[in-house]
Length: 389
Image 1 (cartoon, rainbow, N blue to C red):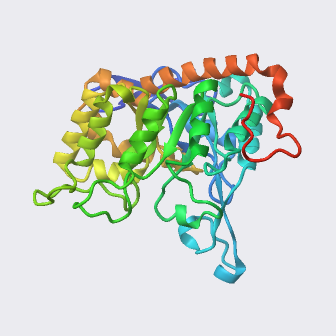
Image 2: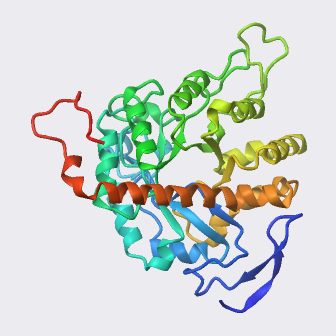
Image 3: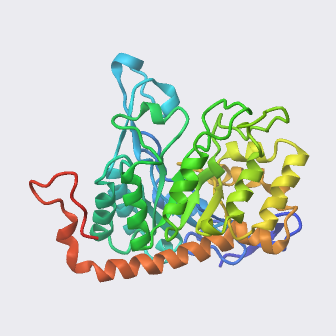
């Protein structure tokens, strides 16, 4: 390990951490890293991003482990829409998005380009599938058999997302679609962790109604008790905000705050397989909107320290400062946690879940190594065919 450059507290109220030079630390993070990142996009909406070798340098000795996935959607560059301006983000054009399955092969090959000691720091995820397609589960199975030893989970993939769902070409994804049930069934069989983005509510929701997607989401979760599911961003979005209930809402009105809704799900014994990630600077914005909200968020994390995972939701960061920015937005909340709870949310839960997923998925791959041909659709079959899981 390089010479230690100083002692710095990772989070107020927790133990001091020895921070060393990032140079030469791509292979191992040491014991003093700040967090593991459960939500990281190596590439953007036009499939460009950070070189994976540079990303390991960005991780340095500050980030221990990280998920690794691209963006499952490609932004169309329509000259009729934006002319010579080439959009790189879905808010920069009215042109549609379409599913881009090559992202999985790209991530797998990038991962395989690393030496084993660097591979151990990453957990690639399969995300290049259409959750409204009954063949999506077959795609996931095929990727596992084509790239054994690589993937630990699926996601981040989206069902309902503000400004995005309406732009996706083809059928609209739904929480009630049997295609999604097939995906989650296979994830349980193979041991894959699921990172799911689904807004809990519609944009600009009113406090006079319950979150529109909540009941469907809970029903989906309860249909798949054997699947480890991480609900990204606790269901919030850029404008899907944590609406406060009104005392005069009346029957059918919103009866709980967002934090209370999240806690009710965590308290449900039928949802013990559900976790939440606290990724994205937009989520940090809500959590730190006032001292009262910070305290309420900290109390929730302290009561359920084994059910939350920190993530950045960064997309192709240029340097380490950009990668750490979202983490430090949570400094005020992490400082209110006990050392044990802080460690669990920042690092421990990630290691527990992904270590177990690695073992389960590797076993499934070994057990199915001789069935690679079964992953290919049979000529002349129709959409009613069930995959030979």
